[in-house]
Length: 148
Image 1 (tube, rainbow, N blue to C red):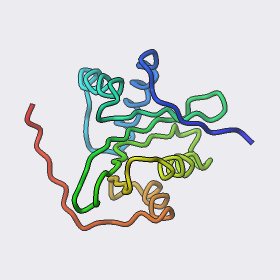
Image 2: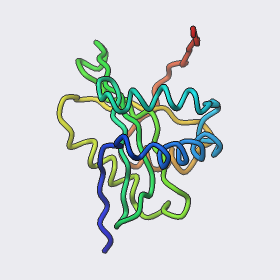
Image 3: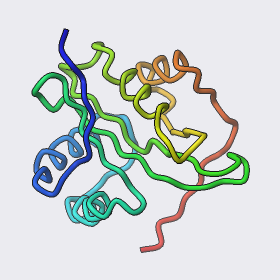
Image 4: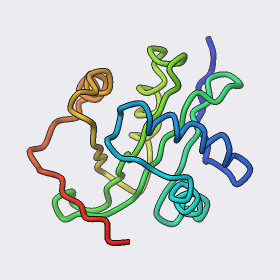
């Protein structure tokens, strides 16, 4: 059986991260578009580790995907919340249980008691996974405004 591991994205892995990020943003998993200038700015956040943790998902000796997580706090969540901002598994590695294993990894984490995520309503594959893991839909209407 091939081992699946998770590790923090490092400075020397920018190209690999950028390549997968581009694929993620072209996949239909999000309605947003990100420029490489935006990726560059965000990559600095990943490297700082202050607000964001970027993980590579390895299957054997191959990088099979990545995930972006951010820590926040909420009264409704009764403390710290881990936001799963992005989860991308390369197409050739889908259906191998890597997403499920990543959630098991997250749910063993310390420093937060609540995990929150968003999903495009037509991303049926992701919805099936999230629901099978016990994640429930909330009836909030997400709003945002880009100010810079």
